[in-house]
Amino acid sequence: MRTFAMGEKARIADLTAATALRVEVAGTATGTDIAAFCFALDAEGHIDSDRPPVSSARPASLASAVALVSGGASEAVFDLDLEAVAPEVHRLLFVLASVGPDIALDAGSVVLTVDDEAVAAFIMEPSEMKGQRALILGEVYRREGWRFGAVGQGYRDGLEQLVRDYGADPGVVLLSAAAAAAEAEAEAAAEVEAEAEAEAEAVVVAEVAETAAESPEEVAAEPEPEPEPEPEPEPEPEAVAEAEAEAEAEAEAEVEPEPEAEPVPEPEPQPEPEPEPEAEPAVQAEPEVVAEPAPDEAVPEPVADPVTAPEADEVPAAALVDVPAEAPADVAAREPADADEPAPVPGIHTFEGNGDRILRISRPVASGPVIAEITGTGTGNFAVWTLDSSLEHDKLLVNEIGAYQGRVLLDERGTVTERLKIESNGPWTVAVQPPTAAPWLTGPVSGDGAEVLRWTGPRTVVAMTHNGASNFMVRVYAESLDQVEDPYLASLANAIGPYEGESIIPAGPCLIEIEADGDWTFTPERG
Image 1 (tube, rainbow, N blue to C red):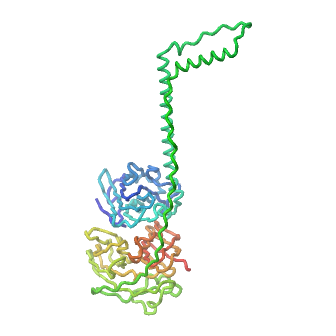
Image 2: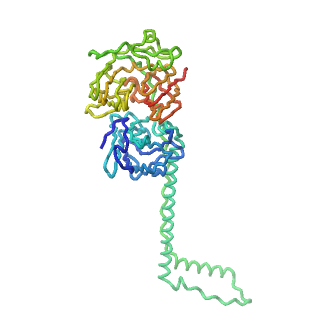
Image 3: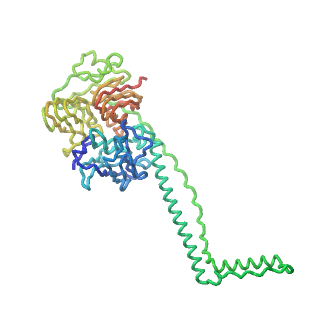
């Protein structure tokens, strides 16, 4: 079995030759209910509002060729037939979500099995769960065949935020699933009621038959027809009515069983008082972020003084991302528009090497997120992982073929990375930088591939585009772990292929991590 790190992907054909897979999803959450879902995405990476997720409310989908075969809550098992997936379905997301009032998930995992044998697994430990109420654990998607990816994307606002991020209306998609569940429950209740009525009718018929068997003459014998009365003496109407009443009373006494005593009706329950809404927590002012001083240890191969971003209207946008370390003094001295005064940047730790290596790194700051600017010039596969304290893969930073250059975040969720695992057939460079060294986002900016931007402005609308063929993911993290309880702040975009849309950047200071395989643009709204 292959254990995946967050962000790692692989061809399913490299894992197994089978096309009939079983996807096992599991998780825990303290004090609340959780449920598993499988969402189907189209070629644009959107959820179709007419196609609710597969879940306990809707346990199968012909289009996605997915069926929930057991569980549906903290443990769920989905069967997936890759050969039967409809052409319009390009991606399947396997999701775990808290459906209780306000409690977040504690842990989650997804495992692919074939004939009860696990072939791939991705596990998120409790330490990695930072208040998410919905979590995309894994995905199965088309790209030169079928592939599996370990995602680990969390949503603090739950399923509603996830559905919105994938271009659908939660009120339609999730209510469709709820309506399907309600319809199924109503049909089941109707069947139970019909069966109960049939049983009750059968009991009455049986009792009547039993009574008839005990006194056949009294029940079955019909009175002989009376001769037609002669016209002269007509009986009194009162006497006739009295005789008929006596006859009916005798028939009821002989045929019908004695009625059982009626149960004493229970008192109607009093309606419970509605709970008073909890007071919203007071919004705390965001603390000032003070740059940490450079560590006492020697800095290997220090880089020139840090570069801050130029004014957006003075320098082309591309220069914001691609300003080299040797930028002229007049560029480095410019201040970003509509942003705080940049603090001095501590030293940058640079490491160079060639080929495969387990690299021990040093950090320019004691705690919190740092940036790794990674360059590889080989011709083969170039992969870089962070390693945890047990030397297990933690986060996949780079997975490319051929030359690569990009910036990625390390330890954005509170971990402390000491080593990187590098696989390469050529030279490489890793520059570990403090968060304040990221290019400042002050206006329109464009780039290609992975990037990290720094935002210090207010809560703002941002427009984004992407023209790549694969993942375009934009996440926002706190610049300092002291800022908020959960360093993960928002997901601005999560799409496959070309993208054009808008979202909202939280108030800074924060770091924006962009994962892309093509050209992208990022344009914050000017105040």
